[in-house]
Image (cartoon, rainbow, N blue to C red):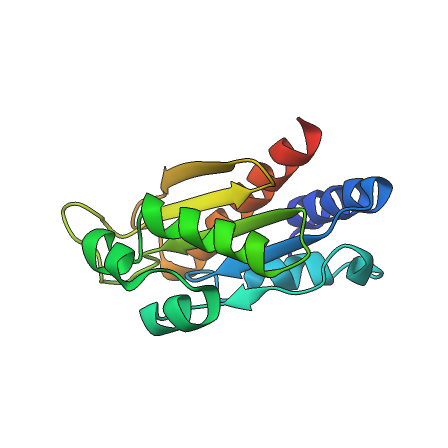
Length: 163
């Protein structure tokens, strides 16, 4: 289902997680659960992955993850403020030691001058901090944006685990 590069990243994330007795959770919007699917493709992943969330709509972001309605109204779902809240709230709501959150515009359509198709915000949260990153993948096609997001999110997870 996933290419060998992504599978290698997933195996490394899970290996480090097992070694350090860490739990990881994801809060996904534009990827629709692909990050969790990748990580759980590896046998034995349940020792690291306890739960993840697909919160595609703003309502789900509010109801499931507790993202404040004012943040969504002011910044929009595809924003630094929202993914920071998604990552932090997932951390606070679960027993995870590390979380990742993504929200973006995969296309086709839905973009704007401020947030063109291919714009994806992502964040990782640990106990004391949240790190944000914004990627501009361009209008490369819906599936390509989603897979590029999985690559970038797993890179963020690996960076956090290695530092």
